[in-house]
Length: 328
Ligand SMILES: Cc1cc2nc3c(=O)[nH]c(=O)nc-3n(C[C@H](O)[C@H](O)[C@H](O)COP(=O)(O)O)c2cc1C
Image 1 (cartoon, rainbow, N blue to C red):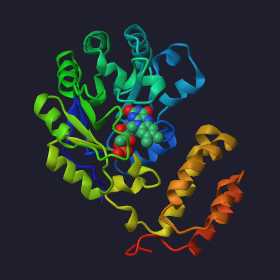
Image 2 (image 1 turned 120 degrees about the vertical axis):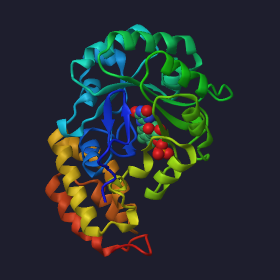
Image 3 (image 1 turned 45 degrees about the vertical axis):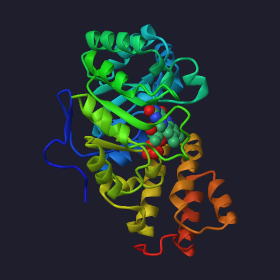
């Protein structure tokens, strides 16, 4: 089953979004190869990994590469971050030429080097700056502008204020991850705040955090009233979640075919050596569903070429699945 529906689930300004499950932007994971696979399986928006505005302005290859996408991925959202309004505006004007469907501002990253500088979730501490940024962006851009936020900075949980500011200054969508800056991934996410944001603004709201199964998507929507649901970690090694299939329903053959396709896309996008290196972290997730041996994992993760890798992939059938009731 594909989650996409015939009539739009919601709109980002005038852009129709078909389907309610969306691959979350994830540095090191939501690159063109993985995004395009998830999009084909039903993820309804392709968000790029976050890209630093300064890096985009200075044409840094590694940063600009994050904004390469396939036409078939549309609607595509470029996500950018910085602590500097002028840089963000300059970068947004520049990357608009690459024709994204919308541009998203990251106000959720808790990594110290980002947040402590006033970017990512650090930007939520400066509401006036957020207002200035969104006002300026909505004046100068032709594409919609959106935000991904958290609950706030530790005790200062100003998600409702920030959501209102984004909306009042021309923002077209809020995605909210129901944790504060310090709310480590091990603590449960707070879905109530997603519902509160939905009650606060009239623009669409995407909920995010701890969605692990297909059923969780409907559960989060029913609990919070949100328009769409972002799935991050649960999509790692499990792009099928966007086709309405839980990991336990996926057969070994499907896993192998997906790994081959994913590897091919990585090689095409990054070239042979980097492609295979960057594929390894996905392999860890794909095979986590099997009770493999340490020797097998080590061998699989040190293969240097596609041929060597594919040769070893056949051995996966030796290992039992972790899912008792699996389809295999
Ligand atoms: C490895 C990794 C990288 C991430 N990179 C980004 C990013 O570039 N931009 C962003 O907005 N969020 C980023 N996030 C946060 C996710 O988008 C998401 O908000 C978070 O993982 C919670 O959702 P989940 O419980 O479904 O994983 C990242 C998360 C992870 C695990």
